[in-house]
Length: 255
Length: 279
Image (tube, chains in turn blue, green):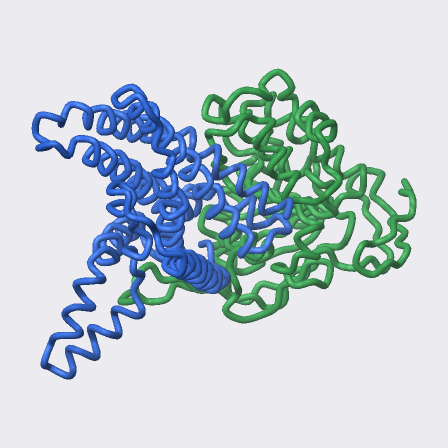
């Protein structure tokens, strides 16, 4: 546990001290604040648009931060040889993978929570009241980040930073297109395509399972079984990704 | 002859008596177990799948006994770093067997007994010296408290720079903090890849003094170097590797067969002469 904590602390500090993080934070805060000025274009829906905008901004911030920092998480250590002294200490490679996952995951989670709280402050200033219901989006954003971070760690355990970040972005886009893929699989007449589409649908991560933003912005109540499914799906998918990453990382040599 | 207090080994529990060196370069070992054993190690590399395999190590065998200071010498590209990476478990040999204290190099039990300084080390620049050593102490075991971390930093002369980020450290300071992380957990075996390269004379003396201090404690030290006087100053034995093969192993003066005319002799010159002799 102590070894995982050491890797966790190192990853957390390393990620926190990256200059790109400041840029992303400023950019997201601007988007949250700018949503206030959309009222003239909102056709009476300003309140809902503000909520949707704030949640979307926090989510995009989370994904961008995860992809930009996460894609280099292992690769940079190998490239710069900073990992060598760690690997020669009595530490399991699975502990390195878990420590890195938790380090960046925790940082992104804290920052997303901060963004959502700032969004609440903007709502107070604009509407004179909190909407704490919106904070329910937080755990689902964290679960989405976990899955994306798992994918990034998996690819970064054997490929380049560029390929890892591209794959992260592709999985993010494809992951949110899963309902369309399901629709295609349901409706296509070609049997082979149907099988392939269903295959991808069940194997690739369905990130729409974590998307409750519209429901929350419009005040639609969430179903308990839906929440339970989303949480189990996110946790199991992330564990599988980390397990695969560890298997690949265990066999890796450091030339 | 200097005797060290008996030590109980972590893995076997046997009480172990170590007869250490002294006088200088006269080293006697009685039935000491090997700290490092390499048996017919081979290793090849190729950069791309269409390229031919380049054989870097061609059947290296070597035994380093406990308590010994061994200088691993050779020109650039001879296979020193590849050998060290096999000993530390960073890469695997194509064939042959490598063990540390009779343990697999990648086992946690072996790693608990090793301290390692890589060649031209790059460390986490965002960390301060203190944070860097603390993280390595946390990785090494349960007995490294704040006081122990501070003592190590003081020991390598970086007490004043402990709260400075590593990105601001000079080459010599990085080498020192690298030695400090290698010393975390008081390892039985120190593996130092080119620890003196790129240092100014004061830095080299400080590092040599540190090696000597560890030597006096009975730590086994395996280090690679290009510089003969450095090796002569601290080593009980040296091994010369050229083009992936061990050419000579023994006491430095015996190995060089009195070729040394001055202390400033270039090891590269010796390698050139020696390589031609083996052609």
